[in-house]
Image (tube, rainbow, N blue to C red; front, side, top):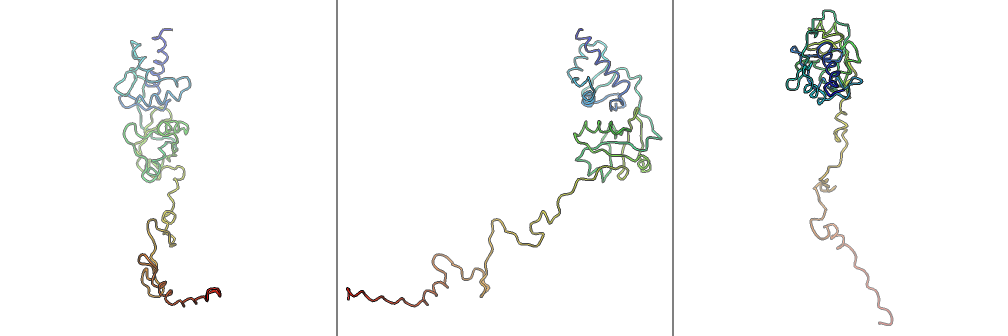
Length: 253
């Protein structure tokens, strides 16, 4: 098999993925048919027998096939023949439940503000949980799976488009129209973070406690003010009785 012939299976696969059934692989082409190359390679990586496909494989196809089934512009790729490609259509009666994933870090914000689209493609939802997780893992190794109550979302103004079999698009899903796992636990309360919160004194780094004289109430009273004995010690020495002189031994008398 020549090098040119070895690229034909890849060419046929690309024509099918991009020109006929992108929804089967969780791909949503833009209105002009283009798909980000990065997304395409992620889809290949999920398919048995096609995980070896890299960008070099596609450039080899483009260089060796006179009638390449795909064309590339910058970082996007699309099928040359898009006559069988179905555009998204309005879905007046989508399934009662749809699934989508969000990044784990974004989940607390999404839980309060709802799911918003950052551009094209809009929010991609799947009728199958497995497909939703497959799409979510393309952006986060551990995504959060959300279950969208479609009827409630439509009542809140959401419009759903069907993009092939089992895939749906929406511009936004309002908060309260979907459910997910419990939110991550918040940080410990202030009492746990603040050592003074329980009212108990704590040692202060780099400081000292001033002692008060119990009789005068003066800070530091009675403490030494420099070298030598403190005043109270000197006075006690003066009050001491002088020691008795010892009598000299007899041999000294």
